[in-house]
Image (cartoon, rainbow, N blue to C red; front, side):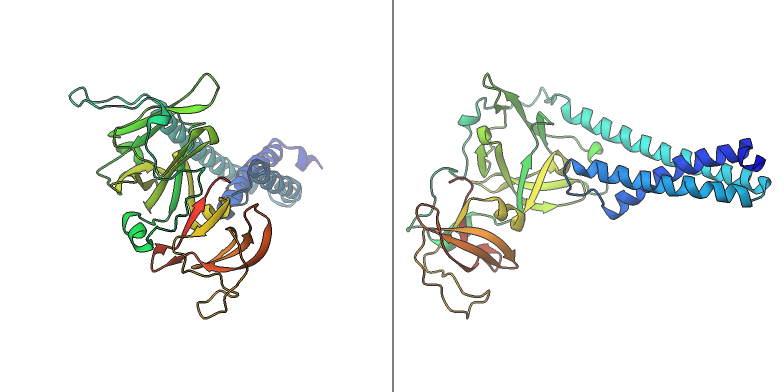
Amino acid sequence: MKKLLRLSSIGFYILMLFTFFIIGLYFAEFIGAGKNQGLAGGAIVLGYGVLFAGIAFFASFFIAYYVETKLLRKINWVLLTLLLIACGNKYYEFKQRDALQQEQNKPYQQNPKQERKVTAPASALPTATNLFKRIRKPEIDAEQYNDSNIMGLGYFSPNFYENNVLYFYGNLNLEKSIMEHSPYDSITFKRNKHNVFEIATAPPWLVPDMLKLDYDMLYFKIVSVSQEFAEVVVNATTNQTSFVDRRSGDIAYWPDFLMSVHSVEFIDSKERVKVRDFEESGDVNTSFAFMKPVKVKDDWMYVFLLDGEFNNVGKGWIQWKRDGKLLILYNLLS
């Protein structure tokens, strides 16, 4: 019993507790335990730390009882070293994130030799999509529509609640981190008297795909992604692209984005709703006005068919893309 109360044994209990708590956190991060869990994610990760610490603390009494004191002291030094390394690594990661956050929140310093025009109110910015009007038009030519619109990988939406500046980067060097790149332009956000976000300043060439900040909607089409950057279309008219910090907003690839829209419609009226998810399948002949996405499977989408009052009148499969081109239009709002 005296052996369990020695200083080396007590130190062993404490070191086992804290070391395995940290190991539990790393393990949870490694397996992605809290990923996409919202507010519960932190509690889940913390739970792994507590579980590992509890098991290790309980086991430490048995280990201390059976292991010789000399060996126990050596184990203590190993545990202390591991604990210091883990804490140092976490501190370094925190400082890196803090430095990046400060860089993002720092006002953009424009080169005085280069004059840049800005647009103040968000309403003055042109957009490629009208969010309220049903944009299906019989005269739309599908081939012409796709020739003038890049399909891309999905959409990027900046998080202006946490970052009041969205920086644009050019001349990307993938061998360097984002902190080693300098932005060439930016968008700044502010709250108006109604406490609604609006764009305070923006480059004159900015034409986002979708803009409706009173509904928290600002979307840029994604062309490519890397570990730290996302290449987005910043002018939907000319298809001009720029790079943004992918952590400064949310990335929604096409399947995820389509699951969030209100309804979809065919660009070409010749397209048909199918009974099964292949082109040779029979047609669904139910009359409908809109389609509600339910599931995406490769090039196909399972939809509920809606009438003009948005009542469910049927279901079926549609091909939403073919050969890298969109076959549908989408309505974000009713």
